[in-house]
Image (cartoon, rainbow, N blue to C red; front, top):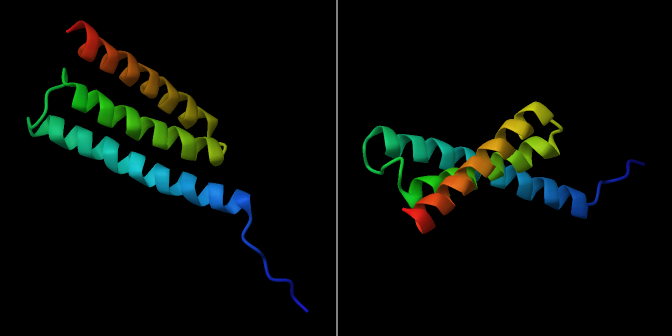
Length: 92
């Protein structure tokens, strides 16, 4: 008799990470599209906020998949976007 797998907390976390990764991908592409078509400025808080959310989403999913090179790049992008967001909101 075959055992059926029960959903676990780990499986649910992985599913949420995958969803956040896809949202991150869409946000990164969306931010780049908006910037490319001149709909937002590279100096806007919205651009840096979208890019921050996107890069953290990609960082989470790459960490789950143990793709540490991509994780490092996405964490770096997240930090840069956060710093730029703070600079635009508080110092511009």
